[in-house]
Image (cartoon, rainbow, N blue to C red; front, side):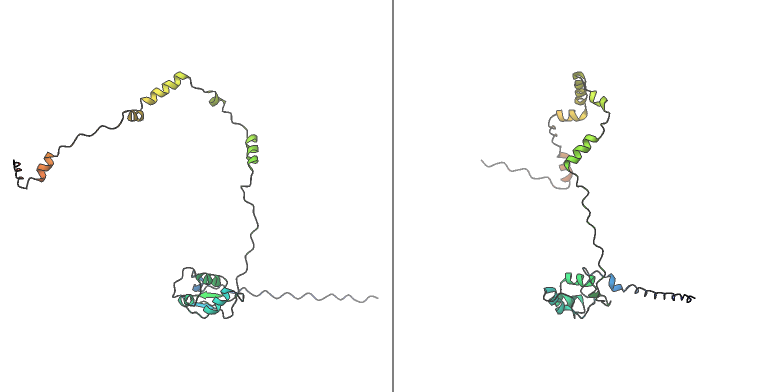
Length: 199
């Protein structure tokens, strides 16, 4: 007589994954660190995340207690440091709180060779494989000497050719200024006659 088979207990369901943290919608996250004014509030994490022995590590120690952008710059911080620290969440602007955890790295882009890697010889082969258009009618047309002369005569009668062949423009005649001068000098007494030269 066989013993009754005991079935294994069903596996326990896995606990549900914790919900993702709510998005940080603090208005300070919208401030551009490259162009923010000097009065914007800044807040840095207390522990220095920079590699020890580097210049940026020493600068971070100097400016990590700053409370405004102006104070940050006065303590020796660079604008590039501010941009870097905001992007890495080591610093927050406008009253937001820095998390200290950098954002997850983005996927590295796959290398894609440039599309214009064809050799000159490939172009020659493509040209040789391309079917020729049937333009035999255009190739057969060769104007005769009479047709060339007729076309030249038509162009010679055109306005552009005449304009070029007329030579330089003629000088304009001198304007008559007497009526203008009379009008301008109407309210003035006549000029005295010049005295005869002494002999």
